[in-house]
Image (tube, rainbow, N blue to C red; front, side, top):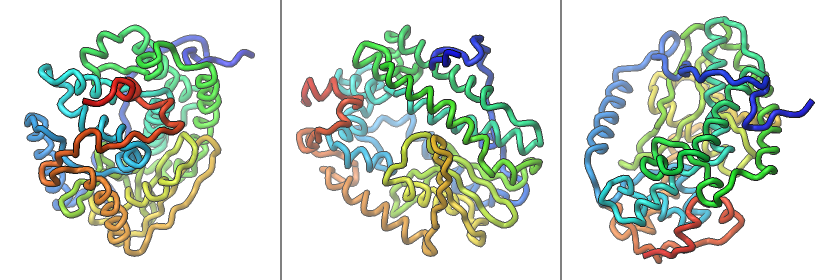
Length: 362
């Protein structure tokens, strides 16, 4: 039988998209409840973010994350494009280079979309088992993911002008926008292999056995922009799924690609973020795990005894490196563009900012 391509339905027939919801959208109830302290903190943070939405600043607010630090390490020039040149690039009166940098920062790839969809599939499964309902088949889950990938392919092929007008509202694959062609056959073949393996391994995770019939009990809410603070610096570190079962807090990070050097640090920071947001977890042991869905491997990550000190050290090191590229720390004003060196490597082939690099920086 011929294997379905990324653009094809596994059954040959597409089905309409449905609104998606999962335990992440449900208030925490049962074994762990949101405390007044954590609720107040979230309310203040949300209010601050809403104020910032309508305030046009010359420079972005400084923050730290694993992905931001990784980009700086891989290529300071790309870091400058992504976090500084693109700032305010959505404004009608923005300079053309800022507008271009903003558009390029919104480009994505099939692998990135696939990773996001696997997180959605996991939340769908969690919702099913908590309500003690039958699990969907791997084929059903795979079809839902293919549908999203097909939508991204169609949007990238047909909506270039709409993307250039409102980059945030339209999906655009890098290959279509930068190279003027669809993703290569090698990329789609590799993705097809991931589709089959990852959905099967996701269904086989042992978490679903623990959560079967639990309802909302033990559910832990992970906000989309989960973060903690270190010396007034916002550090983003969100896990993918968390819950409490029989007195143990479980934190899971689903990985649909190959292992990377930062994986263990990432889930450790997410564990700290979870505890900071839910003070009631301080007395519970935390079991953090990385699930590599391509191979089915589950890797347990040891959470340090002094978790707060460990995370403070890790984040402060990255913050110091980032601030070395600032002209003014208080306003987060960067050095001149030329002070962010371009680091050529194999990553240049998949970089969103090729067009800016070729055109130079002004």
